[in-house]
Amino acid sequence: KVAENYIQNSSHDPLRPGALERGQATASTMVNAFYMCSYVTPMLAGIVSDVYLGRFKTVLLSYSIYILGITILFITSLPTMLERGAGLPGLIIAMLIISFGVGAMKSLIPPYVAEQCALVTEEVRTKKNGERVFVSREATIEYAINIYYWSCNLGTQSRIAATFIEKDHGFWATYLMALCSLSLGLVLLLLCRKHLIEFKPQDNMLIWAGKAFSIAIRNGFTLDAATVDAVLSRNGKTVSWTNDFIEQLKAGLAASRVFLPFIIYWLCQAQMTTNTVSQAGNMKTHGAPNDLLPALNSFTIVLALPLVNYLVYPRLRRVGFALSPICRIALGFALESLGMAWAAGVQGWIYASPPCFGRPRACAASHGGALPNNLSVAVQLPVYVLEGLGEVFAVPAAYEYAFSRAPSGMRSMIQAVYVLCAAMGSLIALALNPTYKDPDLLFMYAGLAAAMMAVMMLFVVVFYKQNRRDEEKKGRLSRLGGGIYN
Image 1 (cartoon, one colour):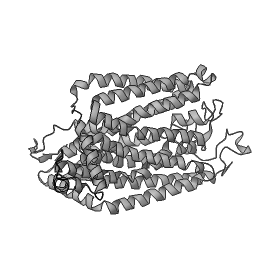
Image 2 (cartoon, rainbow, N blue to C red):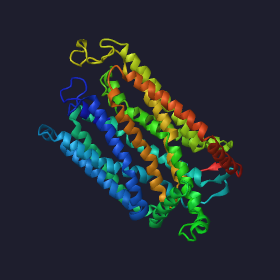
Image 3 (cartoon, one colour):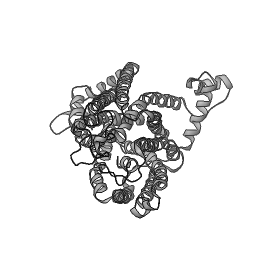
Image 4 (cartoon, rainbow, N blue to C red):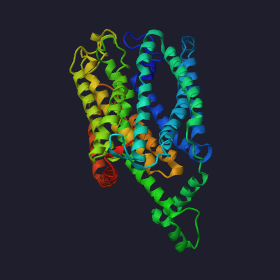
């Protein structure tokens, strides 16, 4: 969010100070390109983690790369460096480095968190009050991933301070704060290493998967052709893997199908870091920075996730109705669609408001861009609330689904497939860049809302049977005791 103003506006902008003065289209393009890069690099990190270095060493390497990128960004955003023209090249280099570090961690941290639940023993226990509960590894993983995602969003609340620091002291101070925070996180990671469960890399797993897929492609695009018996009867050869491994690969591919709708989901989410920030800049913010508003998204998650984690999900389990990942993802998609629909309504309201109507801050009555349209930014707040609630359900469920369906030695890579769908969403956002101008923004938001709702309905139809199987499995576990205990 800070980057949008940093790129878009000049340091002399009377309303929204920036640094590089490249305009909204360029700012949106660069931010979307950054996110796309950060969503592509996880595949490489997944291979390094699963096959070579292991989870912890790869996380440590990625974290260090992230810190290097932030250091470059901090140095090149200093006023003296900006005067020498280092701002734009420094930003581009920093974005490339940061995208690799952040992207790698996107595919590493969720499965690493879930693996810490590996020693949970599934059993029926009797609590002190006499209630019989089933200790479920799956419910524990769900709980752990929700806590991880909650922690991420709690950390992003620093953007509230960042926006005011940026406004009062400059962008360099904001990036210095980020650098100090990351350095502290690195120290904590090193101190906690001895308490973490670590699994050895399985170098054979990737080789086996490559050979199995090669056999499947040559024999009708079916993995059944790569089973031990099929290869032996067809070629008279034995293979190193087992039939169970082939079943795991099938499950991994099935999980990847579930991730495809997230392309549209992340296309909608991309607006929150680009165009909705600019949208807020065209309304009366009553002295608040326009890039402060997206903090409400993560604030909603910080408030809602504990309620869902500690009240909603446990109560549903106790009555034998646990929300499966498929169900939670569908609910998240619906809320995201409502968020985009609200953004479309806000944009229409902006165009109906004086003084510039369909040309916000671009007419003579705006006094050189100093006067936005006469509409309070408060009407935009539900966009971030709806998107935050959508994330509460959809994103942790996707992490959980990726972990539970992936072969044990390919968890980071399957997680990377999910993240890759986000990259495709950012790529589409880049393609839509010509529409990011007034007065076309209303149709852009409306189109995204309609597309997201259509994807949600198609998702429910396609994965209805999978959802029924998940519900039946959880229902059987719930009936073993009075409920499911995390």
